[in-house]
Length: 530
Image 1 (cartoon, rainbow, N blue to C red):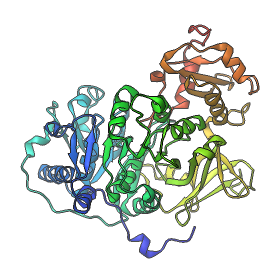
Image 2 (image 1 turned 180 degrees about the horizontal axis):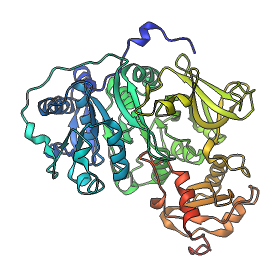
Image 3 (image 1 turned 180 degrees about the vertical axis):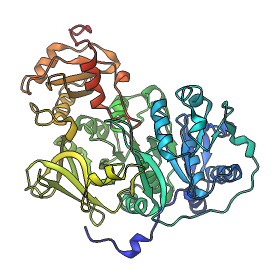
Image 4 (image 1 turned 90 degrees about the horizontal axis):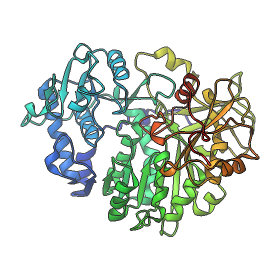
């Protein structure tokens, strides 16, 4: 990757003006929700770019009137809804730093993160303060608590209704501009500090990738607290796409919405795409007009790619997979078409982004590994975060010069394509790649909604399976599907809802191992498997 240039160093992607710039550029483009905004429920479900821009301006004025000032940390932790995004943009508008904490975090985890932030502002709601946070001494951890509703022990944002609009405040491109958190799959999440410059360096290549579908209606079911959401939003608003935001991904709820709006762009989490396989032949053909699917956060199963692309009636639909993490943004990409999906290797996650990212494989000594040789995946990117807040040593440990250790094992072929094997922490000696076997099982057993292979008490591979409609696992079919695979323990059948997951529906494998080794869990035989 070429060295950084001063011109690139000075560029910035700022959240505050996102909706206002889009409204000025494209006018009254429609934005559709599946539930009303908590900050203004009376507006209903059918909104526009200019209306959302006005809401951001209004919320920014209220926050300034409440006392929020530039560079201060403002935590947004509330029930899942699009107003998380509007609040983040409003905080950014006045030069403060939005800190986005997932609605799915447990109360004690939120408490520890608030403590790490050293008396931030908190924007929340009644559901959080009377629910997960009820036993947390929030008042002693934050400067002040603001609420989008009538939550107890909080100042309602409505108190500042009618506050004068405030002029935008723009921080230096290398100052902290956004704080998100890591997935927390192995413990408490880390707080990732982004700046406008590194965010701009992630945005530019994604704009180039979005050019072929510019202006198409986009349907999104994504975590509103993940940095990926804001870059995707930046691309879609830049090109003037009508937007459909989905908070309830269940096919019974999402299917009719998709059928009515017939999007040309669909992005969600890989596990949601597995769920939406049911929509491939659903009434109203909800996926028939999709030209481009996009998947990030985790690798996607080949079976799912094939079903999604097969559901589209467009002449040449594709699915784009991005490989990366919160700390780096996307560092590699892979395109699938109907033809390539039929012979896809789910472990191939693509190539680096020319001019913006580089990828290498390092051996145990930190040297570059030969093609085909497995090792640690490392990335060099202009989009890397500034630091982990309050954990600089942990951040430094993941750096080898300018190379960032992704925490994954993989290899590159002779043409430079990157293949993912497993997370380092998830590897099992008896299995070459848990992810590869999971792909095989998902392709062989269409009834599976999820399969996760984790180490058991004696480091033996234990498959945990979830079936569609909670049907019992057919053990005869299971034995046929696994006959040529490495020996594994008996399958454990769980409900999908019981799997510990992150806000992006990424399975917490380490937590599953703790659950398996810490308590007895039924096998498929005792759960009624045939």
